[in-house]
Image 1 (cartoon, rainbow, N blue to C red):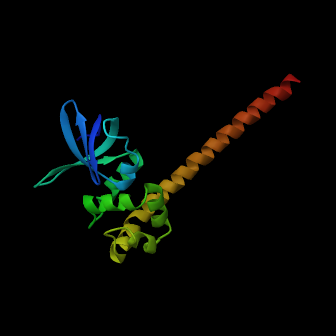
Image 2 (image 1 turned 90 degrees about the vertical axis):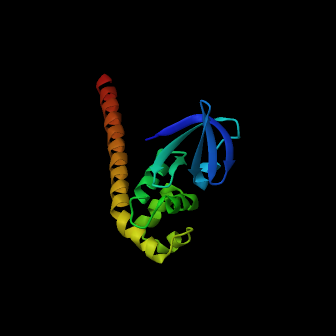
Length: 165
């Protein structure tokens, strides 16, 4: 498995880019969201990757951040969603917007993505809703824990100040 590449960006033409790493040029497919984050040609770049080995090809997919790569990996596990459709979905909206559409059961927004019809949108919602709801709940719990920690720290400081008077 190739987790990431660090090298010089030598070519870019949506959805393909080439990263040269120690004299070897890697062809990488990336979403439009990743393309918008790319530096100018010749600049050094670090790109997270997902490596797919098929009978007829070995393909590298590149991502600007972990959330996009994780969503790609989640999408390709769904029946009827391959790497090409997953990349099209990521090109149509970022991970946060996609998770919002899934949680809200927004079939209309999902069907505006290239390659996603009504049945595919409904399948995505059925397959991913619990996953995204769990993640949203966990994120809120972590946020509330942080708030509680800040309140406790504030109360300790206030208590110390009151003892000192």
